[in-house]
Amino acid sequence: MPLLTDAHWKQEYRVDKRCFEQLVGDLSDHPRIKKASETGAPKFSATYRIGVGLKQLGSASWIGNTARQHGLSVGSVANFTKDFIAAVLDTYDTAVSWPTEAERRVLRAQCQDMHDSPLAEGTIGAIDGSFIRFRERPCFGDKPKNESYCNYKSKAHGMNLTVIADLNCVIREFHVGTPGSRHDAYVWKKMEQSTSPADYFLPDEFILGDSAYPLTTHCLVPYKTPRQSSLTSQKKEFNRQLSSIRVKVEHTFGILKHKFQSLRNLPVRISSQMSLNFAVRWIAACIVLHNKRLEWQGDEYVEGFDYSDNSASDDDDDEQIPVPQIGAQVNGNEEELGVDVDGTQLRDRLRQRMFEGQV
Image 1 (spheres, rainbow, N blue to C red):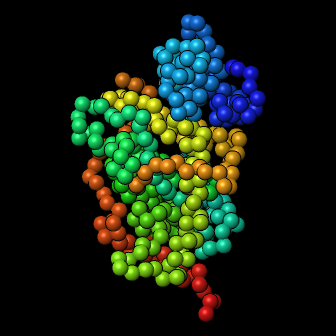
Image 2 (cartoon, rainbow, N blue to C red):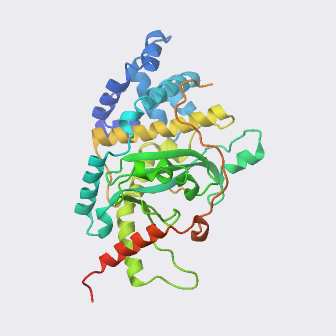
């Protein structure tokens, strides 16, 4: 590995040296890394291969640029990257997990320490979606399928990534692979936290979303401004308090895409189901690395730094992250999302509690 200062090391590999050494310790004995390191011609160490893979995921450049920088062939960089992603995803279960009941109690207490709001008592995290732009438009040979990945807000092709993050910016669950034309509500309705909430939430626990998501007892969202009218001051204050807590998931996306800049312009040519699966695995590996980096290195969120991702949201035998099937479009209008009576009543009760004792 090159001799770099700490600052240049983080710029080159997106993590500090200590974090990189821990990653090498985790992955160097993985069969895909170890076997390739022992049989490659010429031989490259596990540390070198991991470094090349990490640089590729952290960089917004084409694979050819990485190859030229390291004096490698494009094929070697592609193989190093594929082996690195496979090794990272084999640590998925230890890096990405829904919080246990005890962990959720801690998260709720943490939220109450940070925010003086009735919302904080039940909040365990927040949900949001982000558009992962493809560097090139897909070329499946099926024009309708190609165009289903077009996000008409940004006029670009890509896929949706939805995450549920806690207040420490740790990603607790995610869903990736849905075409970019789909609405956030469509993705949420496919996630298990939506379809089987009793398996993930106690009755008084919930996550916070923006107005793109349907209101339920376990997903609270802001009040929408009525047509030809305006919100009351109480509802505006409720929305302000909800947004002040929910902003952490936006910070999460900002940090994720700042550290793994390949997610700003994914350098994977999408021409088949196999290449689409590889794109999904690439994104999933970045999420695993994001959580590992937070565990080993800590949150580097800097107030005032622009972490915005500027995205519109609204034969591989080791494939583990399935690509969701394309389904019917779901719009974000409240009438079409449906009204959840229990969710409406819970939101109203919390809003009323914000103003108890006030004249």
